[in-house]
Length: 264
Image (cartoon, rainbow, N blue to C red):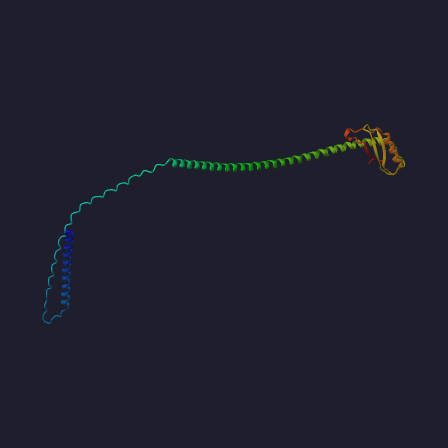
């Protein structure tokens, strides 16, 4: 294969540049040597001999740069790779289709079951929370009703107590009036002995019928004066029938009556 022209030209140029560089350096070295020798020479007493330095060698002008080689023709572009032939995927068989459908059905059934389980748990939780809330509200209602009932019962007890006290007071007042009326009638028939001293008290148990008729009169406590006790007993029997009460509920079959010669 013949050597390339470009390589030959470049080698020649390099040689020319090297020769020029060496010539320039040699001339410069000679100039320096001559200058040093001239400066160090001993001058004579009578005359001085001057020497003109030799003219430096003229550098050879560089040759013009070689012309660039013509551009190489563009290389042909490589052909793009051909696409790989498309491989058609294998068509699924009926067994594959049936298996896939079964898997999808199973997956859907599982998702439905999971969703129902979640819904059931949430529903159970809501029902449990609602039941607890209802029980709490019911307990609060019962507690409130119990407090209200207790308050009403207490109020009713107070009212009954007040009414009873008022009734008892009225009954006691009516009973006292009834007893005083009986005692007044009996005292009107008592002949007090003239020789009685002090104001002794005699107590009698009297048994009567609802009509006021006296069945019996017994001395329960003597006054200490027999004449006075006997006078009172005779007055009791003489006062039959006794005054009747204003209300039938005030009637008492057995009465305990107290008598003194002088009312206090």
